[in-house]
Amino acid sequence: MDRRMRIFKAIFSIDFVAMLALAVWLFYQLSKGGMPSQYYMKQVLENLTFAGLYFANLLFFYPKLANKYWGVAYLAVLVFIVWLAVVINLYFGDLIGLDEAYIKHFSKPDFTYRPNNHWTKTWITVLSAIMLGLSYVSSVAKKLQKNQLAFEVSEKERVGAELAFLKAQINPHFFFNTLHTIYALMDTNIPSAKSSIYSLSHMMRYVLYETQNEKTLLSKEVEFIEDYIALMKVRIAPDVQVIFEKQTGFRDLPIAPMLFLPFVENAFKHGISAVHPSYVYIELFEKDKKLVFGVRNSLFVGLSKQLDEESGIGILNTKRRLDLMYPGKYELITEKDDFAKEFVVTLTLNIDEH
Image (cartoon, rainbow, N blue to C red; front, side, top):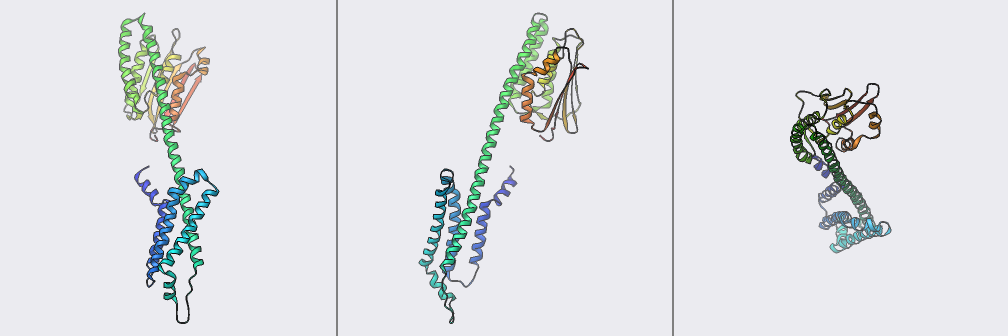
């Protein structure tokens, strides 16, 4: 919440409006000229009483009693303090000689003024009840606001913990697949295995440092994908087509780290065959203020059913991360074309809204 909104809410809060109304009323009463001094003293006491009732209920009676003894006990306390307010004001009037001052001021040769304590009791009772009602509404509003804030904080902590858990699952999953690739090279191509270990160390820096933050730069994510593709090319046949097309001059936007990797991993896992022509096409571009990441890979008999049954922990976790980090601001489309023997994943992010 920005500073202007906080000021706006403070100015138009129930507490502020109630106290402003009392202040305006007191100023109006004190502006009357020619009245006995006892009259002005009485007006000050009345307004102090109303303000005292308001904040007593707001700060003490409602927090202490309403939640535990809601019902007869709390209402009885409110009725008692209203009665006490009436008694205090009447006693103070007698103490300062208010009735005598009124009789002296308002009586005429042909008219004798008679004080009306019934009107005073009614006035104080009604205004006290109004102030207590306003303070009750303010108390309830503050409680709801506090509960909402506590819920938002708790939800933010929960989401943060879940995101950390998901990333903690993705990272070992990635390393497991990569180490499996290097292990397969140890018996067939030691120089390539050594080169792959070096590439893996470079990728580990990204995983260890960049994934600790909620966001990384798109350029770093692209470099990571390129390193991963280079690592995968070592173990696949030379005739497998692997193409990564990137839009030139794209904006270096902040993005969730390792967001694209599970889709690329999935393509290499299910789209490569040792005996059939295979391909993995990856593209990244920006269109209409939306970032589009797409992966197309060849699909073979037997793997189609496997794709339906298990998408892998990486894909499932990525979907959940998208729900948490880009709620309502992304579109994930997966298409399996058995006729064309192709599997397509398209992720679209509304980057300007996030």
